[in-house]
Image (cartoon, rainbow, N blue to C red; front, side, top):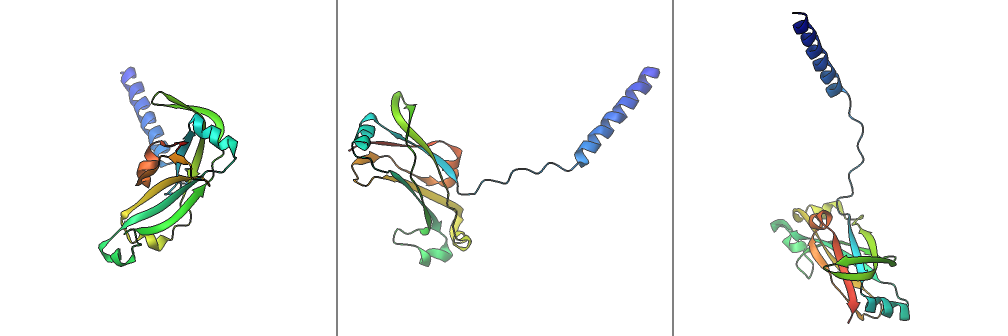
Amino acid sequence: MKMRLVCGILAVLALAACQKSSTQTPAPSAPPPPPYRFTARLVLTEKAVTRLKARPETLTVNARYYGLPTAATQGQVDRNGVIALGVAHASPELAPAPVTLNGVTYPVSAQLALDLADAPAHALDGVAGGKVLAQLKVTAPRDDLDCTGFQDYVATAQSRQITLVCDVT
């Protein structure tokens, strides 16, 4: 009998403790990341590194943000048939940081963050489903590097590692 009484009291205390913790205010969480920010990795082959060392140049990664039009915004498309939202640029700091992809080691790499910080809010209203796309392109002043690109939804870029590879043309 005493054991049942003790178990009953412990059960009531456990329920009371659970009830107190559920009514407490949760700690403030970190602000959500900007909705159009994602990171990409740029890697260079040995030949590309040699070419860049021979005549120091700055590589630039350009991110063009755009969206597909809705039926109501068909008249606002650019010459490519999309709603242009803006462009972001990044000039990565290349460093000796080897990266191995599919069995190939690239001696130099850089991590960079891209964000469409100044997207006009009203422009997003004209984008089908509110889904924003990004197109990445690497440019060099002499245009003698051949680099892979990226074109997909920003949500895709945020969910996986984007890697751009540069080699000599």
